Image 1 (tube, one colour):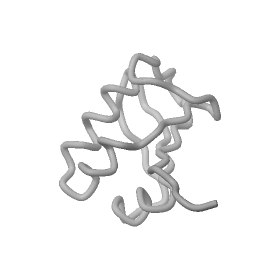
Image 2 (tube, helix red, strand yellow):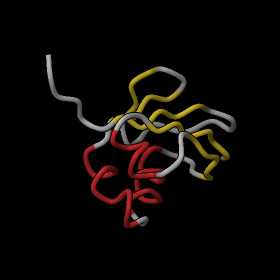
Image 3 (tube, helix red, strand yellow):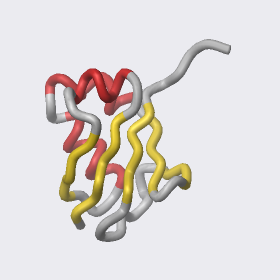
Image 4 (cartoon, one colour):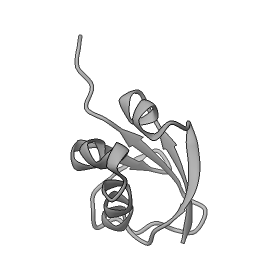
Length: 77
C-alpha cells in the first residue's frame, strides 16, 4: 500500500523532508523502513504513529492512501 507519511518536529529534521510517499502494509513495516535509514533509525525506534489521525500500533494495517503521522516523543509542559 502507498501511504502519505508526514514527519513532525525532530522526525522532520531527521528525515529532511516534511512528507513523502512510502510503500508499507502495516505500521511495523513502515517503522522497519524508517529504521533502515540511518538518519531516521533513532526516531523510528521511539516514534508514535497516527493513521488517518487515529493512534496506531505496530499491528495496525495501512490502507492504500492513508495519511501516517510520525511523532517523536515530545517533552515540555
